[in-house]
Length: 408
Image 1 (cartoon, rainbow, N blue to C red):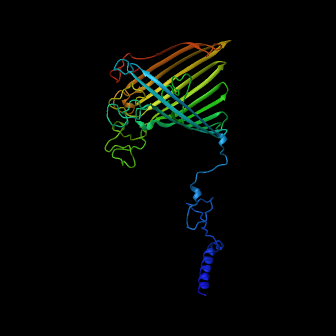
Image 2 (image 1 turned 90 degrees about the vertical axis):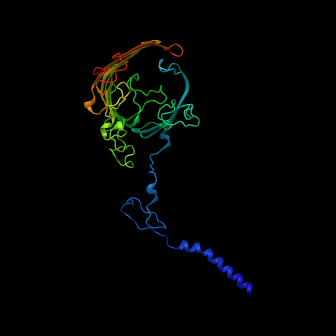
Image 3 (image 1 turned 90 degrees about the horizontal axis):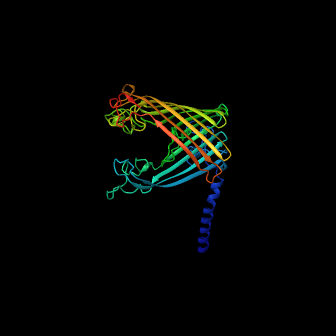
């Protein structure tokens, strides 16, 4: 009898445990009270949860679209490893003989959202072999900013990987054949004399801004844009600014010369307008105007001879003409370019128009021609080129005094 009671007790216990999921399943599931005011999105119903007042989890997920298709994604890439031998690299000032190996690698992602909307992203890794090692001559010292001379950017190791291009391309915006490109992009015109990708270097050139192109007819296209090479006052503030709000501000100091920008006038911008006109077969005439303005204050030690010198107002006006023709196995080409620059630049410390005491008055010209032997293996080209530019004959011209008021 006792054995029967013991077995019956365990049978009831097992039966009760097995019935628990069934009872829960028959019970009414928990529901959340519908919400229509923020932060609940009005077009997304709440998800029933056992815990009340939860925002629908999918409101935080990346948006999904039926337009996405892997067939619209194109992946490209290239790699270059280039050894270099340098002899007398400073032209006799110091002995600068060297051997190094440069490398860059790029990978591009192009996605066509629609036939008229495309996005492109191109990361790039650029480095000299061994540039991440120790500082020469200093045992155990890491390669830090402005120390490793073989760093291609000369600003430390963090800049070896960066975004070379990142833009969206919009076609036929409102008007047929009116295109816009917004974001970081390449600017390549003609023979790359003023604007080019500069892939000869280990990094190349790219620019942040917006470019438009309008081709009202097949023989004529107009391009223009605004680009910002330097944002002078980002994350900066006036003297004594809170460093938590303005990380680049320097307590008790104002102006770029003290390490902190103070207003939007410290930026550097350039604007361009260009036409490409083809009046006849093989001939292209390309006038162009470029306006470069730098509001960055000049500082002690800055020189008008340095590239992209601060505190200047410069116009470049000129044109390029190119012709191609020939017959049989001979292809002829002839190109001529001329540009004139005018404006003003500061020859000493200061900021604003009042300190731009040197007048810019300069020109540059080039003419080149050649013959390509199309029927010969490797199609060699025999050419001749002449380049000329203005100058004052004095490499030490760095101020209004030494330049006699002119920077040619």
